[in-house]
Image 1: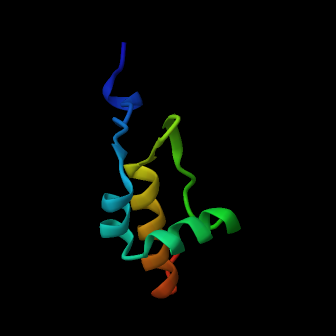
Image 2 (image 1 turned 90 degrees about the vertical axis):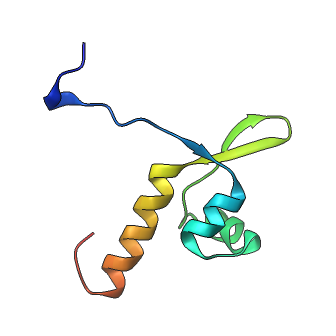
Length: 73
């Protein structure tokens, strides 16, 4: 049973269009950064379907904001 001290955050899958809206990168740039290991990797949902975990993409965006402002992420 979950309590207030060990609350589990819900996870939500998002598709590439939502990823692009959150991070303002093109599809090609998203995949380029995944290959470089600098962007959250997609999750395979099936033979022709992938998605990202929304919280991981948001955390990436927040880290870029903190980095650009010289703050600790």
